[in-house]
Length: 98
Image (cartoon, rainbow, N blue to C red; front, side, top):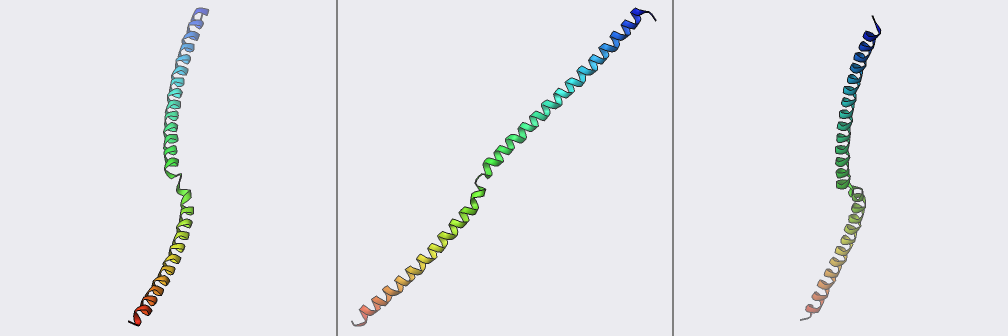
């Protein structure tokens, strides 16, 4: 085997290796772009979920305030019934003598 044949085969093998590496690099780039696309989709979905659920943590506080409002409303209702009874008693007392 002479030097020219060795060089020719070396160049052919080198070109084949470069082509294989280029194909593998293209496949890696495509996979990376796909991963990036899907990661971006996940990121966008996560932001939407966070935006839609941001106020859920406030529900505990809302429930506590609603319980306080209920307690106050019940107290007001009790006082209003007491006033109503007193007014009924007063009306009955005023009309009793007539």
